[in-house]
Length: 329
Ligand code: TRP
Ligand code: SF4
Image 1 (cartoon, protein in one colour):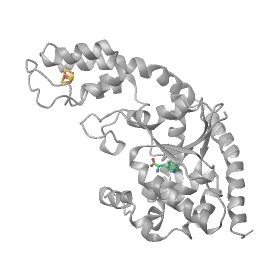
Image 2 (tube, helix red, strand yellow):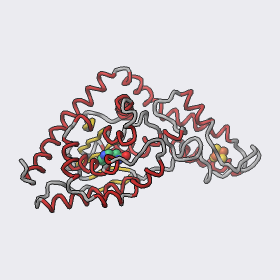
Image 3 (cartoon, protein in one colour):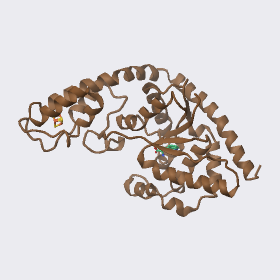
Image 4 (cartoon, helix red, strand yellow):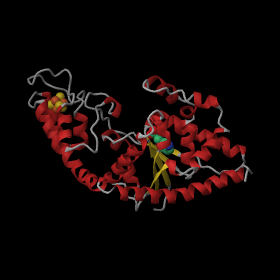
């Protein structure tokens, strides 16, 4: 596909859930027709949190690839690749690390936030501090014009732009392009318990769940916490389930539920059953795809391998350009 180059990556942390789908993947799928898209599995980035158990990463990466393909990313339309199969990412990361002042990295808000948040593993590594430097290498190697990311990644993107300006200025050549962040407006989608949907909170609905699992999870969803009895009126505006209706159910159904809920004419149990129906209807085709794709792991590997070959050529050329500008080749 012609047009602007888009690049984005996802850390492999296992099966993807509806939050990942609506927050990123759905957008990626819609962009592949209009842009020259490169999407990659950021498996080296996931070492920042999984370094004590790195053997998990390989399978997680496979699961992510399967979820991508079953959700509609089409290898005929976009380039899908694996970060760690392209050593140019590591080499450029090293070069960039020489020009990035450490205080820039220490100021990064996600650096501090994650250190407070993640208690299960020591996040004080050198590699984690440099996470945005590796991310910058990921982006500039492909001369991406735009990077679709969630709002949480904005500080990283800003840092990338600073690093790029510094590099280009130091070596007096516009080798790298400053990318724009393309922020996706994510619908509010919480997990079963009302917190942000996350694998680590154990509150997620996965793209790989069975119909039975999905039904069970929807039935367990928190609703309007103030609605104690079936005869109490509810408030869809504070209900944790209603945003899912907004995504999955037809407008008329939404309006019906909204009004019936406020008059206590519908119980949460029935409301959940309606959601199960519309949710499954939307997920079924992807679930079917998933079954077929997961049954052919070799083909999945081949798709990623072919994408990686293609991406590597681009990465190699850009790295060469960078080293030429620095006069180190
Ligand atoms: N940091 C991103 C995330 O956790 C993943 C990522 C790594 C990425 N490298 C990237 C995203 C380059 C966009 C571009 O979501
Ligand atoms: Fe939420 Fe539906 Fe219950 Fe109303 S009826 S509180 S919208 S689950």
